[in-house]
Amino acid sequence: MKASRAAFHDVRAGYRAQAARILAAVRRVLESGRYILDQEVARFEAEFSRYLGVRYVIGTGSATAALELALRALDVGPGDEVVVPALSAPATAMAVAAVGARPVFADIEPATYTLAPAALERSLSRRTRAVIPVHLYGQCADMAAIGRLAAGIPVIEDAAQAHGARYRGRRAGTLGRLACFSFYPTKNLGAYGDAGVVATRDGALAARLRGLRSYGQSGAFAFSEPGLNARLDELQAAILRVKLRTLERGNARRRAHAARYRRGIRSPRVALPVEAAGRLHVYHQFVVRTPARDQLRTHLAARGIETLIHYPRALHELAAFRGRARMVAQPREAARAAAEVLSLPIYPELPLSALRAVIAAVNAFE
Image 1 (tube, rainbow, N blue to C red):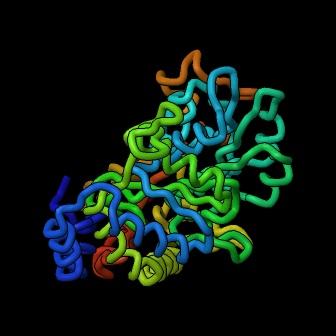
Image 2 (image 1 turned 30 degrees about the vertical axis):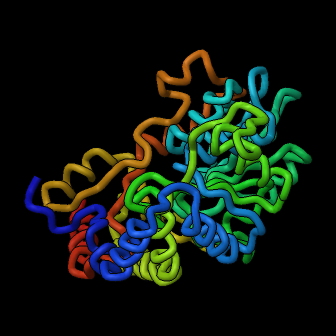
């Protein structure tokens, strides 16, 4: 590949923009001598709670841990089923398997890549104990339809890619019984390591989650149930407190970049992402689509444009879930999307010169 004209994501650019504040936060933690579950975690939980408009936020070591904790808090376990979309990061279904339950893979809506309500309805059974819609690429699933169909079954939002996204005016993270976020470094709100949270309005669930994330501890050397070591650490919490202040500005820049792509890309062979009515997309990824995906990726690489595929296989096609999952019908739309989607560079600090280079290279695809 040629020297890059457009890096897929440069996390260093985000750091440089806030280096002084980030280094001051790190120094504050190091000098405090308190590194696990102290003031920085408590303050970040409170600040992210206010941002979302949800009463309780529980910091965790990752979004995968957050999903597993959410399922454990709902007593989901062996013999139970959890409906998940067939197109997502594997962690969504891995968390279900981790608690001993069976993932049920449902197909997606081809326009938004999110859980299709009709497929969800077909996938529900007497064993269903939770539904996990994924707000993929930065756009919320159809939560009104999903909520109606779930009809009392707990809905856990996988909002790992949707910090600041909205559905009918409400933020992602406020639409289900629980919601799980990732702060992986490349996310719209990213730490400098693994980190996550669970958000909920339910005080009893929140109390249980706080225990479960720390070995099931309920008091001074009192352990009421088996739990995990899944705590958010003070360093990452301090960094996230700094970066939370600029999340909305970063999302606005992502949307501006997406608008430039929409105006500029004219190739008839490439389909642009759809932003559904009533949803505010925050473009964690800008995902285009073409049956000639692999040829387009090669074409762009030859011109110094870095791309990634989110995701090259649907979840039901992965060996990890053979014999461990169920499907009512083949998730054909998910499999088709996995063969056709391609993520173009998009992050707040993406230089306009790089964005223009991407547009020119896509338009030159014949």
